Amino acid sequence: MNVYRNASFAGAVIFLIGIVISVYGFSFLLRQNDLKAHGIPAKGTVFEIEEKAIYRSPWVRFTP
Image (cartoon, rainbow, N blue to C red; front, side, top):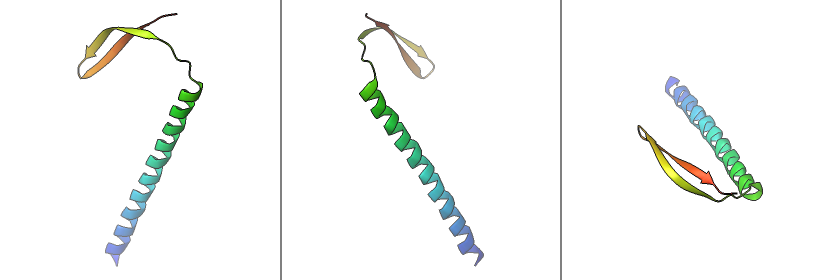
């Protein structure tokens, strides 16, 4: 009987984690769509790529 209770608890925890990940993904999608709809496009040129350890960051010069 105790095994079923432990399995039920693990299932509930996995289910809740799935709900949290789904909510985060949906909110990310809404933010991306809002940025595409209301963002201001800008043109620029990448003039340098900075490398630190395993990360790379572009330096962009925007044109008016």
